[in-house]
Image 1 (spheres, rainbow, N blue to C red):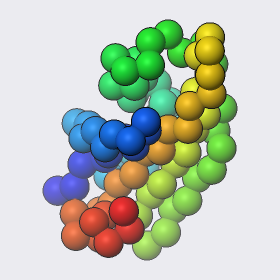
Image 2: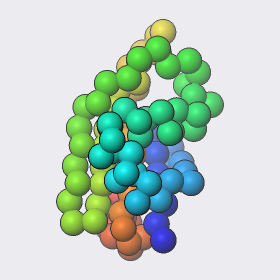
Image 3: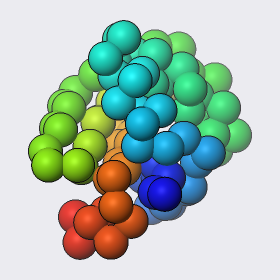
Image 4: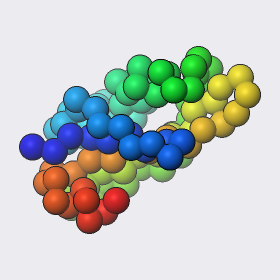
Length: 93
């Protein structure tokens, strides 16, 4: 089983979300996925004032979602990546 990773500020952070979790959250509302990872990101960037979905790609068992998180001082691109197969994720990253 493959887990989702968060990529931002030259970090790659594993989460406890699976591929199925990510697909389920995206089908409800793409911002629900960000709510699920907000704690992971908040530890490094502090208070996030608002979030905007920038890009979402779902392709043959691979998902990549990019957000812009706005803090008091900056805009930070944050990408969530996962694949149904761990080997596929390594190829895409």
